[in-house]
Length: 89
Image (cartoon, rainbow, N blue to C red; front, top):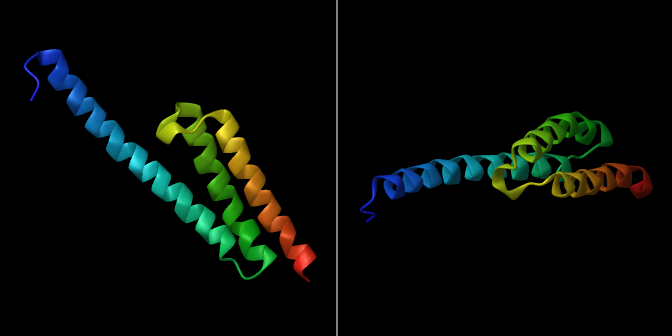
């Protein structure tokens, strides 16, 4: 246990950040799962804006370790998945 007041505060803030980061990562994974498990291209296209929004918000605030480049990489993956529906038919 920390002895200094500032160390106690840092522990509290770190725990709050951990919980928020976990939530952000979880919601992004859920959105990605919705796109991947879509049966049709229309379903995937419907899930894309929500996922893109989550990625942009995470990148803007650097939550859960998401930089702008990492968010762009995720968006690229999602685009490839959605565009793959045309090639599958």
